[in-house]
Image (cartoon, rainbow, N blue to C red; front, side, top):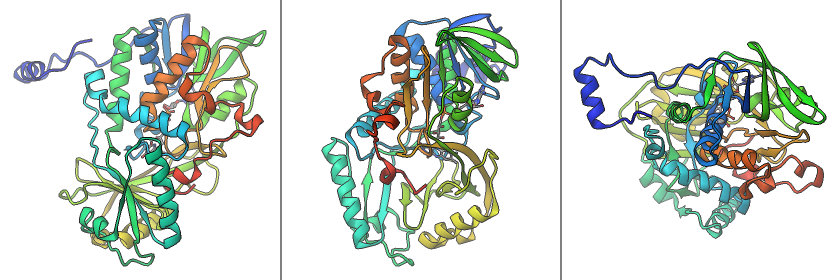
Length: 414
Ligand SMILES: Cc1cc2nc3c(=O)[nH]c(=O)nc-3n(C[C@H](O)[C@H](O)[C@H](O)COP(=O)(O)OP(=O)(O)OC[C@H]3O[C@@H](n4cnc5c(N)ncnc54)[C@H](O)[C@@H]3O)c2cc1C
């Protein structure tokens, strides 16, 4: 892989940027692969990259019905954190955050990680108690969490209205949390995977999964049938469709999650602010736009577009907490389809079909999990057994009842 460096930037600048090589290859589709990954979002691409780099598998294809990162990976609000409640989630998501901390160097691609902290607010004494319990659990899991008084919240976010309709009683912050650039994460993994020999095939929809004697043999696609020894599904809001093609069901609800950005303004918000009661979260991007959103839509949909009622709700919540933003204009609004599991923990690992693997049910929080999701799924596919970090995230938990209930640790309710 050609490395990016100051020298290459200067050289290409001096030659009018005419000689940059394409960031990833556009390969011809082969008849069969050792591993086919369905979905070129962050999870599919990261899985392919770690399979090639750590497990020496090279004959891999990532198929996408659209473009690289055009699903939820390119639609999310970029929040990266590991402030989860249960030890298994905390270990998994902190592994992800640690991988994020070195990802720009690992991929030689700037993912623009900004560890500006993520602040969770409490608006009543009861919520303060709940937040203390949550933050204590995080600290017991060896992850940073710090309580803040209302005065400390104000110091951190000078524009906040502490005396809003639901007055701010305090909060806690994970200082290692923050944001990174979602497109860069997809493109960085795509570039690194492609350089390892992975074939990324765009505009290639999987329409069927072929199974013989309980084991996968390949996929039917809009570009013909492709043989595969192992297949992994990483399609975010379409997990139930792909599972149906393989003859089993997954307990997910598919809903829209919307987000929006304001016009750009000068830097004025240097942390991510989250409130479950006021029901919004907001950060300021490096371009100066306020990126904000709330909970998922309350009905099932595959529409992938924003709607006025949620826009109104999110804007009302934003200006309640940060009234100075009332004079800004909203520039864009969009949605992605999220698959939400009953315990809001992802579904990762093996499936009832031999050599078919799944990484789904990411709900509203799978962006932060991309590095760890890729790393652990690559291990799972290479060894045909779950990586120790995801042993509790398998489909079988819905049979045994051993759920990992992370509902309370979701950024906002859904
Ligand atoms: C508005 C919004 C805000 C969010 N904010 C955050 C956040 O701040 N932090 C966070 O951690 N998470 C957030 N998320 C969730 C996060 O974006 C997702 O969990 C994550 O991106 C999932 O990645 P993925 O690779 O599994 O899926 P995707 O990026 O959606 O990729 C799946 C790919 O599969 C492809 N595909 C689907 N069906 C087929 C088929 N039949 N054949 C071939 N290809 C197919 C799609 O085209 C798509 O490119 C947010 C999501 C949304 C919608």
